[in-house]
Length: 152
Ligand SMILES: CC(C)(COP(=O)(O)OP(=O)(O)OC[C@H]1O[C@@H](n2cnc3c(N)ncnc32)[C@H](O)[C@@H]1OP(=O)(O)O)[C@@H](O)C(=O)NCCC(=O)NCCS
Image (cartoon, rainbow, N blue to C red):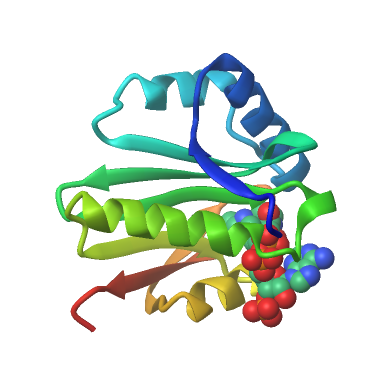
């Protein structure tokens, strides 16, 4: 997708776009208040958005960077744009940016049944590091904890 650009979240209009993608992607989406709380801590919270000429926020990736570790909190792409490499581009961008800022490790949780996301993470070098039983609600499900270490 040549016209794709990855940008840093740039204000309320972008946040509204992120909330739309959340609503289209998750059973229990994060709310504006949850994101507002996150964004009060810009030293830790970084949110990247995927832009297309026809769509200001086609997808997003929300992360925390704490010392040498990036945590991928959320990644999602609007259903109409999935399967075009946008999720991969968002994650690669977030990982590269955090690496430049000193991150040496990446962590995330994913629903055990989310085969598409699992394939994507494995392709990017993540591997299984643990299981958190009944971590998710609506529906209740285990989380797989995935890890990627630069030293591996
Ligand atoms: C997971 C997600 C972010 C991937 O985004 P994407 O832009 O579709 O990702 P990519 O195009 O880079 O491809 C990722 C994988 O999805 C597959 N895919 C292909 N067509 C697809 C389609 N129409 N819909 C979904 N996935 C598709 C790709 O083949 C690829 O897997 P592969 O390794 O077999 O090639 C997206 O499916 C999504 O928003 N899902 C709902 C939210 C979610 O589950 N997020 C992860 C939470 S941990």
